[in-house]
View 1 (cartoon, rainbow, N blue to C red):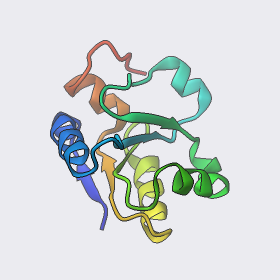
View 2: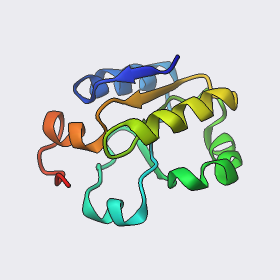
View 3: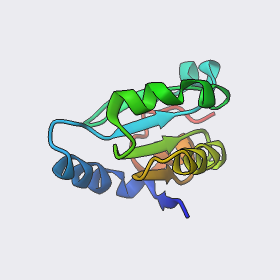
View 4: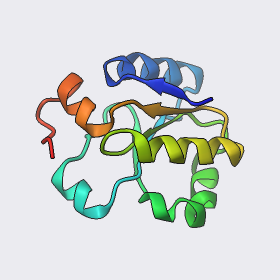
Length: 120
């Protein structure tokens, strides 16, 4: 079962992940399409932002594994949280152990964390 992380709780999750793995920031994996990234995006703040569209995840799985290993903390992000949940499940089934889904996606992020991120 993938943990659902409310964007308002993201900072605490990030800080906990940083404390657990000093020198290796947690990852926010944005699985939206390129046009969506141009419309709205989060800004790196104590985490590493990785942008891989959902459809490319299987082909680029090794890239994620090599970048930080399967125990790196990863928070998956999409528009409303459904695609990212599917990706989070896929990552967990592929051996990643520290995966959460950002519930409500970038839409909730804009409302709860950073109102400067446009809604679409």
